[in-house]
Image (cartoon, rainbow, N blue to C red):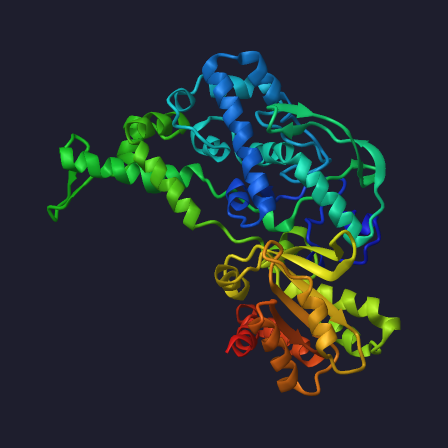
Length: 476
């Protein structure tokens, strides 16, 4: 049974912001530190900072010979079941950073030349340089280090989707970066017959880590060694019948080894190669899993947007169907704008609750319209107001959305309504607002939403073209 099924959400993975985990086993996806570091939001910066401070503290303790404290910090990265990510085929059991043994991880790190020489800097480097540490262990370690913000995320998602929280649940160890220690407390969390659950945003998981030992060793380190041996005309140089000289990777691995210990030894002689690999990875961060990939991993159906459009058309304008209208729009936007827009919130309170926004999305776009928008305008959050009116929108509705903007929250929003009679007049009202420096608003009616769905169904990459055209009209 999945989380969504247990809590009767009536939603499948495409409509959910979090990974819809199986409660009795693990899902074969993993938290990737590279994906976390690529986030643009303040929340993303918090996550990256927690990972960095924890690992720096552990490495500092190991280099200083403070073995007991290093082992204590590592001991809280042990096997836990509440995240349900990994390779467990049967009952979820966690995987632990170092097979559940703090001493084994400490031993691998303390004996590693990569640690002593400063070659190893980040958690993901362990995938390249520390024997016995792989994808499962690193992902499990990340889950534990990020437990604090992931608990807050879980609480937000439960509030958003209407999941009951059980009070006073043991939080488990939460990394306190300021004090360099693990804290614990009692917090509200969702609880199932299989135990407590901590949810993970689906934009952060991948089917494999970005840092891959084979990729680094074969495609970065060995080519550099090949060039050096050719230049030095070493005894590993072969002369082909054509007269061309070569040094094979096979010959290099036979002489110098092909495991992580060999990688550490050879990287120490060529530290720039590791720097180049790190730089390469910052420009090649893998994309979040698509709806199609999640469908394969979870054996779920793809989103049925046509049925949502049918629901939309069947709603009557007016107060009675206002909540249903907002829910349908949220489902459509959460599918069509994924993974650019994430972490939705309903009825976000502003100014101590004196103002509210129907829907608020975090803009984490790495490509497409919302990415371009974040580079040229203040758009960390995208605000959405849903007006299930049977009348034409006017200045009050425009002013209502614009009053939610601010330089810190963002100044871009989408106003969704049932129909637009005079598009030119409505566009001019939106332009007046932008020219007065009160923010930027795009307006979509039922026909626009239906067209958005049609374009997405035919070619998801083209879904933002219509928004860009409307934006160009807005700022012209």
